[in-house]
Image 1 (cartoon, rainbow, N blue to C red):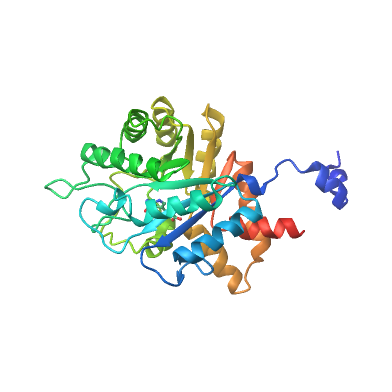
Image 2: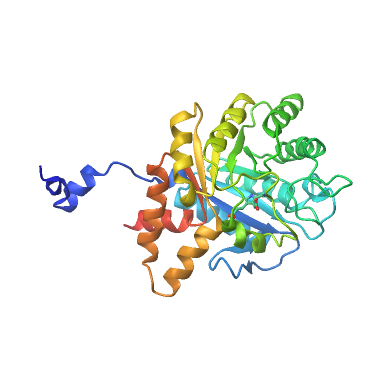
Length: 321
Ligand code: PBG
């Protein structure tokens, strides 16, 4: 046998390629900062910014022109408090940005919103705290229900439940249905691990977190538990499930892809972006090849779509090729 026969020319390699990544399968995460007059660079994510509303509009049109599948919005509020009031304020930055995005590109892209409190709380946790300072699961679900309704009213076309509270999918589904938003789907971060690779994101949203999220996000050592979380989210009515981060969790992603009756997405997170960007900036790796290899690996492991800060850069480059 000579496996090299099918690798001998560009034409052969193109025909023999098992996995492809299409721009339509990429989702661009975006940060919008309340009160920003200019886009603000994020030092640990060179090339990614906290948008002003003007730069946000421009980038939305660029994403639509590049043919990506959607955008996932994160708000950076000016004021934070214990319960994350900005998350449910109809004029809060995330809800305001959602209205802008839906008006600008809502027919071309799926406009998605992060449904979690950490950007909005002064303690930086994904939920509200009890008297002992622990994240209170069921009190947080009440806030998530309110947040889901505010996001649906703002026009969100997919709510992304990234908080890892037990029962969050069922709670949000019930709240959306009761509010007449039966058509708004849920993306459940089923297997979200307590990861060091979220580091740059904390800068991106100016998180005030002290401590860590290990009482609600998964232990990176646990593979079986990732599948269990997925089963529960599917039972609770998730339309799509997510594995996050991506590159260090391709085994979990492959398990999820094999087991899930609903689409499985993966999130190539801020630290994954930063590693590739930093190594490429030093001339240690080829940025374009590393970006493509990382994205095709995530697809090969089983992701139906990928959230990536490289989404527009990659889509534009493929369109030129
Ligand atoms: C929670 C949330 C986080 C990310 C997305 N949603 C932060 C966290 O859980 O600590 C991280 C995304 C990234 O690192 O790119 N709202």
